[in-house]
Image (cartoon, rainbow over all chains, first blue to last red):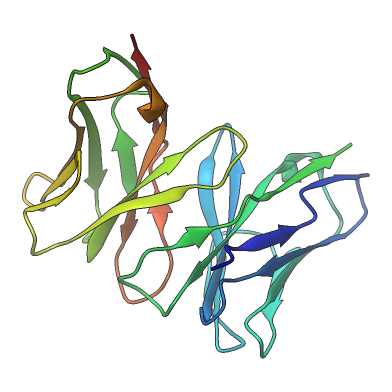
Length: 113
Length: 112
């Protein structure tokens, strides 16, 4: 079966701009989580969506938002980009919530200049 | 404060030996713990999951232990191969949500 697909793979944006990243989970998976990975902070949880509702949110400012559609596809948005937002953004899908393995996409490498 | 530490940033071992990676946590009561492998430029890949009431799990050359008293998990790769070279991450989940808290990772290098 097809894996988790994230688009785009690479993105370069300017400070102050906004960006939207997309994630298509594995078919049948209803839970989508987003993570930010940086060399300094490692992998940090951003938010989790299940049945089109945000179920959990990490410790990130309100500039980071997301949504999930009825087909379980998810998008995350970062507004007013800062240099520190440069990171690898990873999406993970799971069949359901909790006690199950997470399948990660390849990530979107965002560079803010 | 809550902390997850993987006590070796990098580990170099010889092919054929057993690699042992450590994950220690403080101020968590995890429901379960997972181990992932990550190669450069790619997303993490799930390896093993162990519940709080399980002591040990095995999968082929992989073994993970979970000691909730010591607040520690050990991850073993037996008969290691150069293809096992990667960064290994432990992750905790404390509830029923799909919210994983990751350790900083251990970079394993297996040499001939």
